[in-house]
Length: 320
Image 1 (cartoon, rainbow, N blue to C red):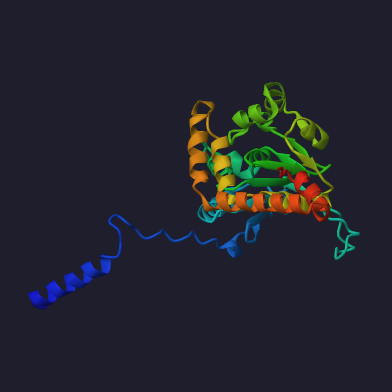
Image 2: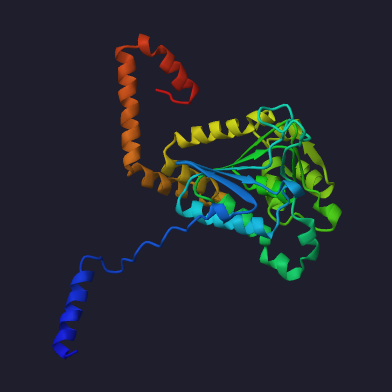
């Protein structure tokens, strides 16, 4: 190749790059969620939500290293493609239910009975310092969109800490939740020692953490550790209904609200003002407010046909 050819080739390269702004880089490829290869999570993904069901029923959904790896893969996907996450465990089975094996014994539901004790027994100092479970649960808590934990049956140890990392927790009458770690000679190091104080208050948190108290569903509801109780067969429908209410909001406003809510007190109100400034410039804010004004005008002009609609909007939180 002679120098003239080299010069032409450089010109062509410069022309090709000329349309790209200085410093611009290609967007990184979205992490590929190979859910079919998962062995501990069963994934169902929709347009605005993703359902991950813990699936190690033979060991009561004990959280092992494989499940932690799959939770990390799931988080990577949802960090790049934000969606509402619903977490659930193994549902209860009834031999009399439609499609059930009449010979099979009924099985109680279980969210997660804790960390896999067989693996936990063999972990040493370096494993603890790596924060195997705590890193995954903290990553899950910081996902862009809300996380809903649907809790049925035993939700203990690491399973409870996974639930504490969620934004919402729904339960069934069979729920049993607690932190039995000190009885095994360890501490709940994946979030319970600091999340429970905020969720339940210091007195109850110490009973759970230091005295091994296990709460039933009504106690968990009374202390705000779950927000709703539903029969086992209705639990996922309730979680989907909650996800639907979240999905009806503006996604960017939900994401920013979740981030600002997690900020320390010292960041407020400055961070609120900055966040609102971002949203004030969004197209969704203008479109949604204009749609609200249009609906209100229509109601004022012809209120009688819209009486039922007014009642529904008032129930959903929309006001004039």
